[in-house]
Length: 238
Image (cartoon, rainbow, N blue to C red; front, side, top):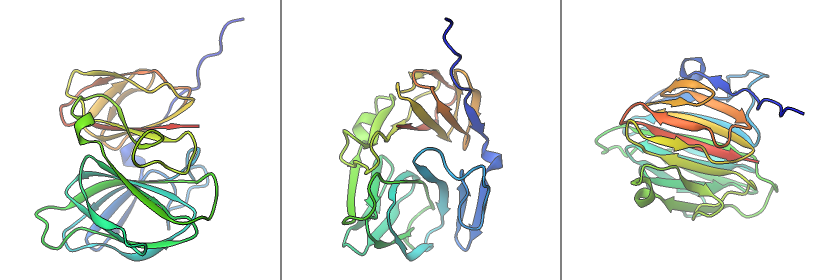
């Protein structure tokens, strides 16, 4: 019998994202979030939120609570100041993945320092944990040296210093140069996000900044990089 065709990738364009504007910050939401509700777009597998934030110096998110969610933050430019009720804090910069497992409850703040020379731009991703409750934990993984290769490298999840409580979920990042060719990780399900720049993805076509692809069965597809400023984020999901 002939093998069935793999599932078609679902492409979401940057222009179709929900947007929230508040004093000193702007957020683009890939999924339903807050006041933005679309019953057909509540998430993808264990991914519950996928937010692209820009925060001006002296602004950000005042203290607020979380529980039963895995929060992974990846900074694209500038520095993000994080402080939480468990005593974890510091400045998160490009090349470092931060993971906060909220467990049975944690409070934190996220801001751009008032004296910063530029805004901070970051992607924040929320996942559903395998087990609710438990003690909140924090971790960070500096992937700067590995990113210098231009290849897709794991930055959060199993095998990194920032594991997540969602079995089978791993975030990969790449900063390739124009003309490079990459291959997506071989996994049952992929979520591909062009954080900056542009690529051509086998089976999905050209993608530019802010575009995402949700793809069951997309593992192993080829990527051709179209611009030097490209930064690619790829979740492998169970």
